[in-house]
Length: 541
Ligand code: NAD
Image 1 (cartoon, rainbow, N blue to C red):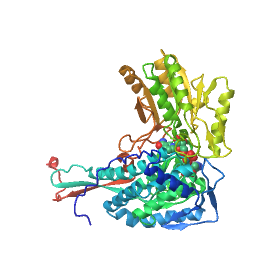
Image 2: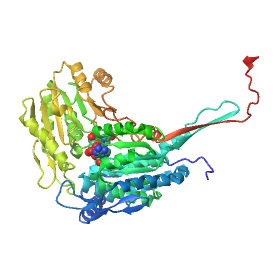
Image 3: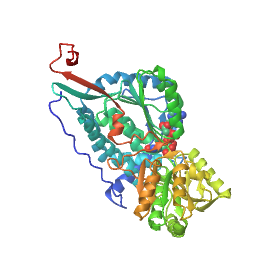
Image 4: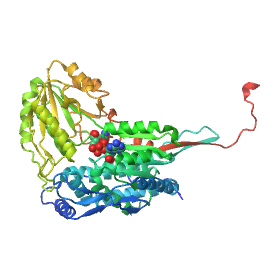
């Protein structure tokens, strides 16, 4: 029972640890990495709090050492998916009606557990199976996930406080009910924090969830499940299934109780899911909420007033951190002729210093790309660029998959502005640059705006305020997250709510009140204190 209007702790961003060489946090993390790398983890599915194992398992192998097996995960048959749905629905009654403080408390506790005893484990799992270096793991798997939990609790209470006015004699109030049914969360490999947030955001608002993580994130998904359990999440609220994404999705989307999709992944997959939802629309009990954050072809556009070193640094960090496998990674750039020589000089100097290898060696800036398919696809585009007349590989261009899926940070110069790698999302450490005539500012901005179907992130560089304003207007719809004189990556929860439009997603901004609202269905309650007894209005005389 609630006997007070409770305030939640004010959300603050989790400080990013430095992991300087020989620091206590580095020693702890590397020791945890070693231990987890050499232990054989068995990742079951989780339905109604029970661990489900099947005869169908798949190996978990680090992308930077693909012959080394660190464990296996269990995959679903259709009956497991059906069970996950019915379990979620059985848990709904209790979970949707428990007071919000209990739900808030679970996720606040998860944040504190992750800031403390789970931090090294979550980071190490992310380093091992997703090939992130220490810093990339820390800003994602620890800090961003903690921030999602803390800020979402605050946003939930902000939403609840938003109440209508009441005229004299009546009391209007709205309650933010969870959706009637269950939510389906499908998550990508590249951010452990997104994997946790997609099911957690819906669950925080009182929904029950079937969660299908990426096959390539199963190791850290297991740590998330352990974290939720220790934080006190009741059985059946979030049910985890792995395996054939088409079979799982077909089964889920056929259920009349399907009430929402919380998706992050590639554009094509999201569109296919939307299509299936449309085909099933007559079967559903409610209109499902569809939230998807998808692909990008994120840009850096520089004006000739920009500082060339700053532009080069934004390219190096924006394109090559985590091997360019951030949805926000810069993968096309437009540089004016007059500053290109200087930008190129700095870019060559910076990239020549980047070390590549296992995340176990913290001095490696670049690690491996996620899997062989991704490696082969990127290598194919690099080879084509080497052969094509309208492209030139000016930095990097080498790759090697003998031990891990390693691709050198690569810069392609495109002679035509719509060259394949200027417009296709490769999701790897490759950026393509088009040099434009200094005078053709409007034309170059039009190219940025019109060359791709995406609109996720983008950055402009200029010290001229007229140009900053002009480019901001011209690119109004070209990016959901727009950066001035900064790289287009690294959004922080509570500061830069994240999401894109056009083919990049529904732009419901992960880690914001706007996103949480999608997992609610508002009930308006009007109560009249002195109820009328005469049907006649005064105008009737
Ligand atoms: P992906 O689309 O291959 O997979 C995402 C999820 O969808 C996984 O769980 C996968 O198993 C599942 N899936 C794959 N095929 C499916 C199908 N036919 N039906 C149903 N589910 C299916 O993406 P990925 O390789 O894991 O992640 C990279 C992609 O995600 C990139 O396109 C990237 O831009 C995008 N991404 C976007 C954001 C964002 O916020 N906009 C964030 C992270 C990643």
